[in-house]
Length: 307
Image 1 (cartoon, rainbow, N blue to C red):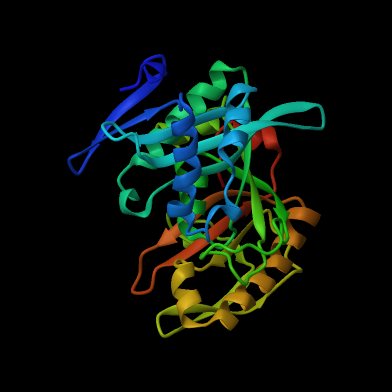
Image 2 (cartoon, rainbow, N blue to C red; image 1 turned 90 degrees about the vertical axis):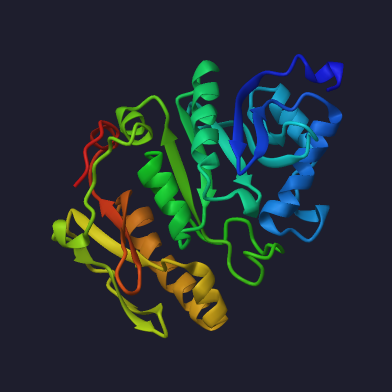
């Protein structure tokens, strides 16, 4: 190992399927370039044109951001990253988490949860209490990970936030996004990360009105209609359990989901002030995913209460 790396702060060593990995700070020019290269592998980007450059990662890391990588312990090859920079809005300083992910072959192995733990700890050490970032409103797995496992809430919807993107996941579609709020010093987040945030497991437990109607066609939910006139305190909205299956079935159906749910989220979240506080996944013959929207104060929700 290079001498310049010996001063790096190492957070955790992890063994996954016989591979020795380490979660640590980047601490050499090569490390920062690795964190640029790994973005291509994680998101299927068409070369460096879509990546955050290594010098921007250096700038973020050295000027108040939280930045670390998931590296092969022996080769130094990056397998994942977290890149966040300071943000400011309405008198409040926060961290904007722009990149977070691991390479496809290491997903669903608990690494995301380990990295989230360090993301929160390091931010609290720096005095931050809030993270923001964006994620795809129709990505069920991201919604569940963010909201249920980590205690994120959603109070803003951003239509076509990034404009046209060229990576494999987003190419040819509007880049609509939720803005995540992760109040890392709150009881809600503490409960979620300790697996103690208990919410409903079935939509029947809520007695909530359903915003949209869907039909399963060839094993894939298709959006049929939606109601913008509901006003109950608790509502549920279905999103695809597997966005990739919708994409494979029909790009037209995917666009129908995008544009239909755009109207739903603009009405209920942006205009009426509903907050997304929970995600329910019902594993039936065809798995279904539902977002739970609640009209309550921020303080009430951050205390750990759920409908």
